[in-house]
Length: 368
Ligand code: AOF
Ligand code: ZN
Image 1: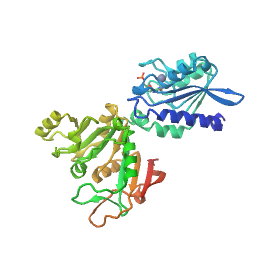
Image 2: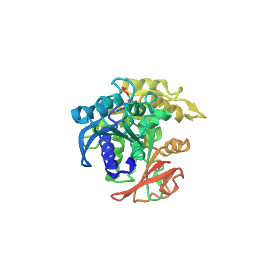
Image 3: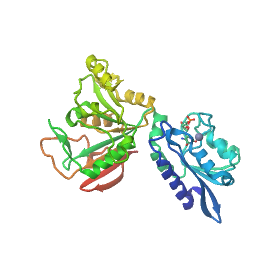
Image 4: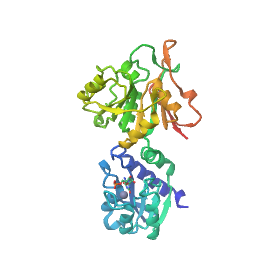
């Protein structure tokens, strides 16, 4: 079976790595990778490489075909997502592969866009091309999680992050921000921010921590995601860093119908966007909120707390990825208990990896 050939597996891995280069930079389009390969006596020679361009177009296949030129003829294509079959902003990539004379196509995953959804593969097969689907499918599904979740569930892929002390606390009662994890973990969190379309905190976190929620890794400042604060109908403290500097990241306050009118005007004047929320049983209805976010093109949401927000997302079954950073210190009796710790993660999550970030222990989980 071709899917088990180690050379093909390595080439698809390289293709997935290429696709990751524009992760989060292709708008509502997924960042797709394409490699065009000629085999000489069984040895692969890459003749064309493409990744979905910044902003989403041109698509990966046409970039790779342009690079390969005549050498695309008879080549094997490795594409991380099914080539499109629709006439959108660009002509169908499946047709471009056929016209270029590609002999064989490996893809990692089917494109759930209703305009494609198997039709790209069918076009290639109808043209006599050998099509193999699902090479490194599991990895592609994870890499494309934002796009796939938005297309299939009409909501963003949700990544919840918790920083927990050794004794399972996320902060001190009635206190401001206290450092639980160290510099290496914080840099990792900023990297996670940079890969998300949006970041969300509750009003409690805004009040207690006064976070900036931007990506401050050197060179990645422009990768700060949109910032969302869940206010509901409660007034917000206005003298927060988040409202002071809006140049790096558009900022949204999620407000209910009864949110204070004066604050609404004050926020608008300051350049903050109001995002209206529905309520269920006195709390913001998260499924509807996520649906609305997806409608605005948000595919990945990074939830950074606090405790009530984390519990609400977990209880609603709306967490897809979970990152727990455990710091070395103990907070003691005055601490606010974390909704979950490494040891109490629900059964529907699978531990994907653990790492040591200096003195902190990181555990990353994915929902089954
Ligand atoms: C591909 N290769 O590199 C990408 C694809 O608005 P359009 O015309 O750009 O179409 C957007 C759709 O194209 C998107 O929803 C997804 O189905 C597909 N993305 N397809 O063949 C690519 N980025
Ligand atoms: Zn395309």
